[in-house]
Image (cartoon, rainbow, N blue to C red; front, side):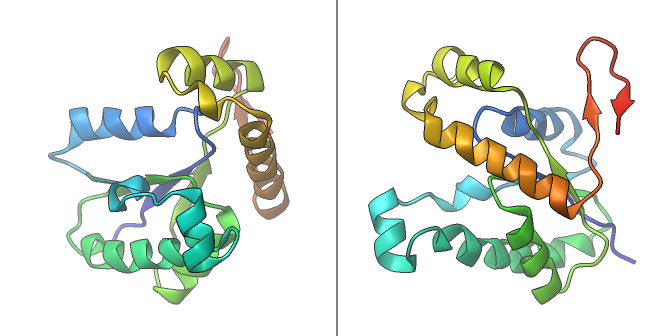
Amino acid sequence: MPRPPLILTGASGAGKTTLARHFLENYSSRCQVFFFDSIGVPSTADMVADYGSGAWQRAMTPQWMARLRPMLSLQRPVLFEGQMRIAFIREALAASPIANAVTVLIDCDDITRTTRLRALRSQPELANPTMLNWARYLREEASRLVQTYSIRPSDRSPIA
């Protein structure tokens, strides 16, 4: 039976790519790691022209699930990272069909996100109210759709 994939989602600056790269660098012999953005991300204008507002992500998520499905039978864990709405992930998993996937929202507070985007990633153009609203939207969607836990950086204890 195929192992369920682990899907990391979250807004820019949350740390999901850093986590996925850590797995790629340290466990690539034991797991497969895929990055949503590796397919190339068109400009916002191209996304809207080709798919409508907000629909590019919804169109690409099922394509990714279709690409990942054959990998699941290789008995090596699959980790998939990208900025996707949880609702789009659920739709794509149902259509693929992939059962028992684990979706994790990687999140951080706004100050940490802004600092990471400006200083660590040198992408100050992403440290804006739109990105902070996107992060809040993903957080609220996760709260509505799944049981969520937070981990305090100071003690690493889960909080319901």
